[in-house]
Image (tube, rainbow, N blue to C red; front, side):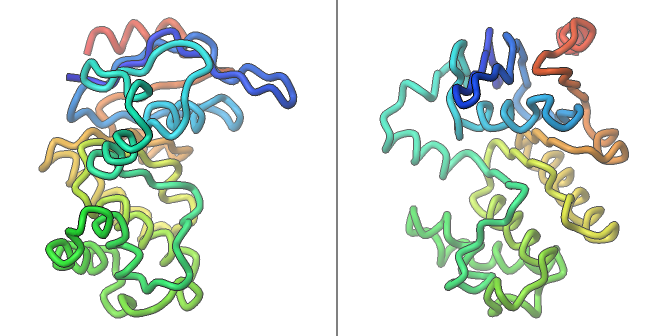
Length: 228
């Protein structure tokens, strides 16, 4: 049971650019992996492909042996909502919804928002937002908005959690709080956690660190991943 990419290339046409060059990678179920590398190396592009938010130009993504890109649009949306939590660099909260309502938004799609409200409140409290649940995004600081977005990504107890610099807009204390909760969820629920980060101390928390250099995973990285 694993996430696998085989021979994945990603090209953009305007201007013509190849961002990923034949990526081969396997991430086991329940593993905590960090993806590191310089800006522009292809980290976020790879994360988008692993999380089904984008498709490779060439090559294959398999999630537990199934290519999600063969699913219908409706099936893919359902799969993402039920199995994948994604933390973006920007929060993308809906301004007309409160913090609690934003967190529960994925649950509304399956009509499970009432059932999941206690967990939403638990997440918001864990992120130090207990007294902000009825505030709108415009009434929250940037760091508070990001923490609401992270809670939203976790509300469905996703099997796969993808996070793109989740602590980038947070101070040290809140960044450590977020990482503590993410690692706890990975450890206690067996969710697969794939994290893009520039922070060495957070990268060191993972079971494995994957380094991307100019859209490629160096041979030493591939060999080390085979041994795990």
